[in-house]
Image 1 (tube, rainbow, N blue to C red):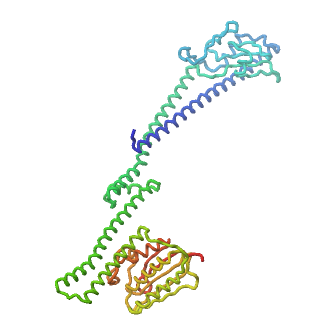
Image 2: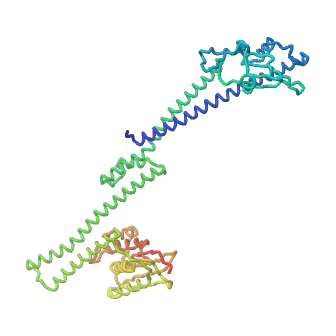
Image 3: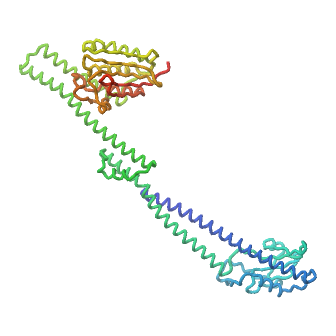
Length: 487
């Protein structure tokens, strides 16, 4: 039997309610009967105490003997101190009543209208008066006993049968009324619990249904769950902070990430196509011009073809590096490395180009050891890409400032340059593949804007962090934080 989750929840809630109600009603019934019998027997004991006082007077009036007490007088006293007469149920109306006809030699049952069997025994437990049979020791131990005392001495004892069942019409009617009231209350509670279970099951299954619809849309390739979609409206109606709502919110966050990834992938394909088309168009035009005889084939045309070929080569290499770093395909050989030595080598290799463009490079590193646990080749590639980016996007005369120091268990390296600058809004997008800022920092003749993307992936592989922000020098400041290694 295939049931929806809401139906399963409702059946579980209703089933639990039924079990609790049955247990509660059974315990309440057992407690009522036990308490009611205790009350009736307590009333019986009070009656015997009053009767005992009268019997003590009779015992004293008879010269400290029971010779003046007859059975008729005893029955009259029992009748006078009994509760109001209650009609007893006939045997056919109360099948649970235990009817045991007594032996003829032990006497008959109490007269109609009298309370349950009451006996008066002397101190040797011989019956003086009283109706109904009894067996010594076997029955007396189960009866309600009250000794009769005169000057502290026991002269007799009253015995009465305890009540273990209801045999009077008012008592039976009261018990039946209580049982019917309990059943009515239980039925009403079950009805309310069923309604509440239905509402609770619907409320609990609503986030599940919402997530099911969200997953269905994601599986269909629809990642744009905006305010016009049905699941978005359902998501807005869920304001709780439980696990289901949190999971639903994260599904929507996943949809946003997938939508952003899909948009980035489409943009990346479009920009790669554009970057590849430009050098190919130039190459094709140059070759067509040479073939048609418009341009003579010579060293100048060969240099132009070589430049465009190099541009294609760099673009393809950068794309290959980005794809490897994105999927974790770059190989890393981690060891203890000195950041200062790598920075010195990077600055030294770029010094000639910086001088030719009238850009000064200043390196300021602290005197303490700058050690990290990483791959020396990839860290060298990281700093070369960052310095190449700074040289390409800095006007001459200009300045590039490099600082390195330890702080809070991290090695902090900052590379900042002079104008032109980048706005704060664009800084967060600089590490996206093929992203280029405005025209003032887009004059590079080679490359496709993949260097910073590769840098970001290298830093992530070293469990570090890379950020970009406007520089105090007027250009861009890129900060790399790598976990320092205790040397």
